[in-house]
Image (cartoon, rainbow, N blue to C red; front, side, top):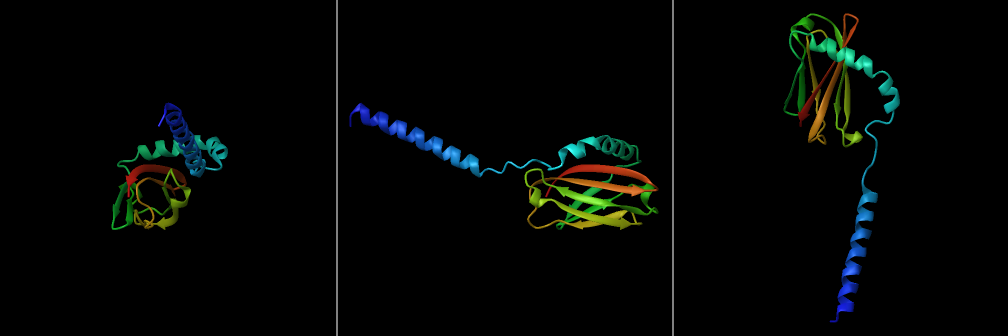
Length: 143
């Protein structure tokens, strides 16, 4: 085999590599983290205020995963208060794996089932209202 064929083989391998990379990159999911990011940015200061209010509580919100269930326990300030809110399991890489549950409790404790498809790194976002005040807590968790 002379050097001309060797150059042709190397060039062909290079072209096939580029074509393969273009194909794989066109199959990649390029969705935005959220579709309404501008509207959420406008009210983000409210979220910061809610998180600050939560940080002033006597203890943080406890979020523990047991047997594909999330157990959320609120601080003792909320033991006898009526709490309404929502829990969101947020998976940054795939919107289809997000799960949301609304709740209403007076016991200071909420349980949420974790869908079987949810495995990996998630954010658990808890927002709730008690005595007319809004609170927000977020925790990273590996399911």
